[in-house]
Length: 125
Length: 96
Image 1 (cartoon, each protein chain N blue to C red):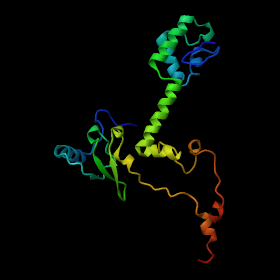
Image 2 (cartoon, each protein chain N blue to C red; image 1 turned 90 degrees about the vertical axis):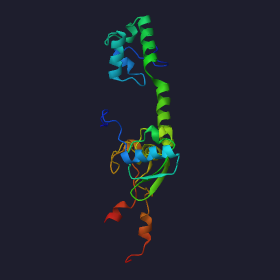
Image 3 (cartoon, rainbow over the protein chains, first blue to last red; image 1 turned 180 degrees about the vertical axis):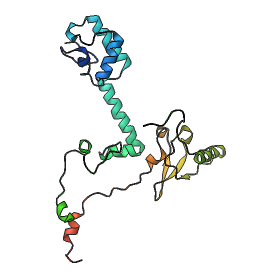
Image 4 (cartoon, each protein chain N blue to C red; image 1 turned 45 degrees about the vertical axis):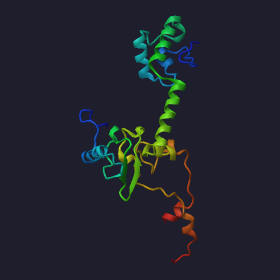
């Protein structure tokens, strides 16, 4: 089980898929990386040569932020918005959608599970 | 979708004029403005603005981190006073 970008251990899947197990690498980026390093997409991670692996690892490390570093960057960006006192920071603070989505319905990802308000029906009648 | 790069950021012409004038005179008085759509450019840093939110003017001292945002982002137009208060209505005696 090879290691790339810290603790990630992509298993015996095709390389395109294996790389997406790393935080910060999706399928599109995975394809791009493999093309740049010159490794076949369909090869399995276990069949890779040792130095192929090391070039892949060093290439990713040099060109992209992944895993912990990326997570840290994200939280920093949000913290900056919060401290700025701007609209986006405010939305982060109150846990509502940041990019102008509707909140009358949906928005459950940001708002969390539904909280039923008692007595609402009576009020309407 | 973002604004075309060719045009550059939208900066209110009159507001920019006022800022440059302040820069020349060294005057740091707050500038009253309605130009919420105006982008904060590096020239604005260190100046104070009073940004209209439809009702009142909110004071904003521009720092370096604010560059690239719009002025309106810093002057909220809505006040959320919280949900609830349903109970109060129920307590009210009928017929009032």
